[in-house]
Length: 236
Image (cartoon, rainbow, N blue to C red; front, side, top):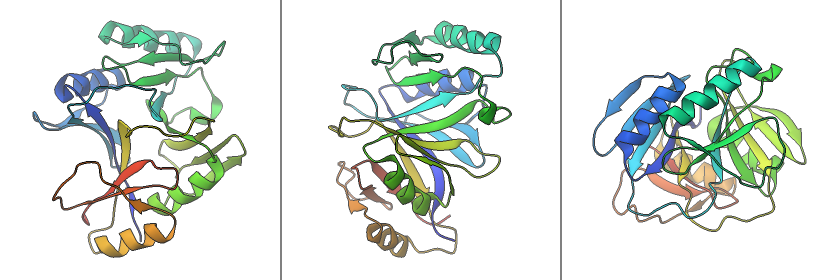
């Protein structure tokens, strides 16, 4: 077994407040809370992790969450709930679409989707969505990194998913990455795995070492073939 998806990490000016917003919106428990980190359960052993950073959000995020709904009424309820917790509608050039684009209290974009058959029964999070210049190629890399199989491929999008979990989806955009991402994925080797061997395996697939100011840490920071930062954690 190689690395698997472990966390979705969100940079935050106020991790406690932002973690509580997402816990309330998703109706998922906070599994850990301190001034340095807040963890919210996402299911399938994956957590949404909020960590403090000094820099502010400057551009549209290249990763975001899509929330699932079961009916038009449920979609409207989710939008109203998000707004009551501090979210606001935002325009990222989406035009006229059946989903609603919102931003959380720190400006991180997310979508409340209209009902879609493929997301029924999936839980509150339908997908973690990644902007990609080449969705198919990037999905192939992340399939190696997470162990999740590719379930859909198209020139405009590609998806990963194991039964019972949310999707990891790659959607084509034309804008290249310009700044450090405020959301990133963490992957982890199994308890009997080897951190450096897994890093070497991912480098062979096109990852490169990345410096995000991490200094002396136990994990390794890499960037995928399109420059998206991610962390390979110590085996567990």
